Image (cartoon, rainbow, N blue to C red; front, side):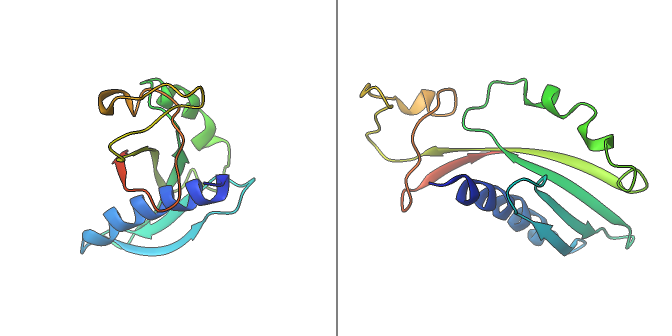
Length: 126
């Protein structure tokens, strides 16, 4: 899958979760490469909020460290409540091999960088 497809799919996962909440209205989202992926929405009190969305090929547990300060880098964002979403996908195919041809067990799909293919089913963490 291309970088844009992974970015767009990550945004779609978060948008779908927001859409399930009747008190949230999605206003806008951006999936353009080179710009921080973001979703803007209104909450139940009609206040604007934003979410930065990033795709991580493998979740290691230190993703939040990469966000420290980046959410405050734009003064225009500071007046709104903001959130950060790290999204990771793992293939749900019963048999999957890494780039070196080694079998990747299901229990390790989120901890190693495994190939993702269009049309495969996915497990999602965010």
